[in-house]
Image (cartoon, rainbow, N blue to C red; front, side, top):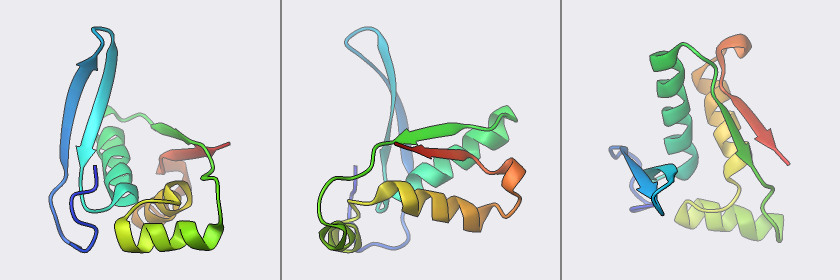
Length: 102
């Protein structure tokens, strides 16, 4: 959930939920989806000492419209931005969480 995309420094709230009595889901609240996902992946890596993987689908539609949606509302091209945030946060490629897009 994007709380306020214009806010550049906010906390990250993560909750675990069980949906429909069987699906375990993590929900995140933050101002930026890619930054929140990257922070979660780095925390999981540090807590478990395992390399986490995250899977995305490519966003459909006009790339420029997707960029504007991301820039203005924090939604849109999440996969490449998440990977870039991880690349900057963890320069050691062998320790970096894996991002898969298909």
